[in-house]
Length: 88
Image 1 (cartoon, rainbow, N blue to C red):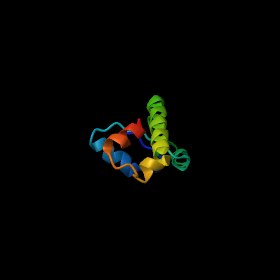
Image 2 (image 1 turned 135 degrees about the vertical axis):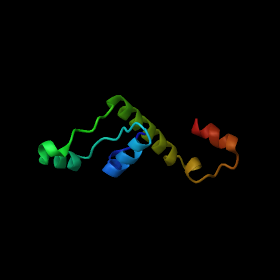
Image 3 (image 1 turned 90 degrees about the horizontal axis):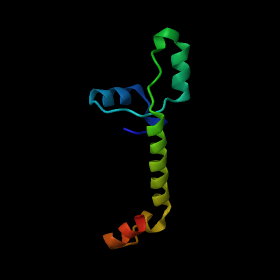
């Protein structure tokens, strides 16, 4: 699962791990600081696949581009064919 820092809570990670889903969520800076403050008891840093994180960014930017297009955002197109043609 690819997500941004807003979903980096421990509960989210644990739920995904229980379902055997690979998690690619960067850690927030406050979480890093709290972990380091606790020292040895803070646990290990979160394993992060940087290449997968880069791909998440591309997907997110693509969705934002589609959301900005007025024809798709307001659904002025009545036919699915026209809508699909605009999205490509």
